[in-house]
Every structure is written in structure tokens, then in C-alpha cells.
Amino acid sequence: MYSTHRLLAATKKQQIATADGRFVQIYHQWQELDTSDQDTYSVAMKLNAWAVVKYELMLTRSWPYNTEMLRTLFITVLIPVLVSVARLISPLLSSS
Figure 1: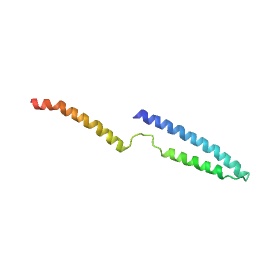
Figure 2: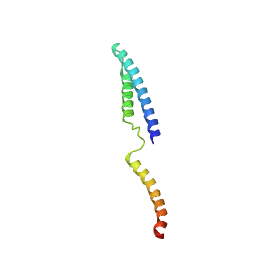
Figure 3: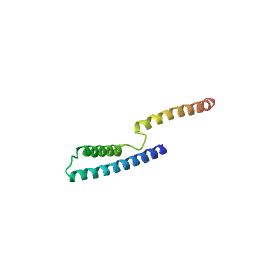
Figure 4: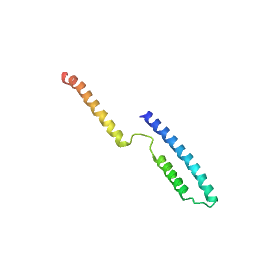
């Protein structure tokens, strides 16, 4: 699980850095257009889109398992283990 977490965290960090870089580039374009009184609508839309991308990336979890998933994983592992232990202990208890 930890290796998956590391991979997701590294990917998230890289994607956020990319979004930051694009946001800065487009922000500078917007500033140039704004100071020269040109139409800034399309650049402002790109700026908004990259801001939303960064926001969504920040909300993305880097831990791959939530509580429900861990519960299911625990039960699917625990039940077979308990059955196996019961099968091993059963002959010992019946022979006493």
C-alpha cells in the first residue's frame, strides 16, 4: 500500500507543479493583454480552467484506500484466516 501511496503522491505533486507553471504563464499573458487593453476573455477562461485543475488536484487523495475499502480488505483476509485457524484447532480440540 505504501508504494501505491508514494506513486500517487509523486504524481499529484508533479501534476500540481505543472498546473502551477501553466497558471503562471497564462497569468502573465493575461497581464500583458490587460495592460494593452486587448480582449482578455479567452485568456481569462484558460486562467480559470487551470485554477480549477489545480484545485481539483489539491483535493485528490494520495492514499489509495478509504475506510470502506480497508474494511472490505480486512474482512476478505480475516475470514479465510479464521477459517484456516479453526480447521487447525478443531482436530486439537476434538482429540482432547
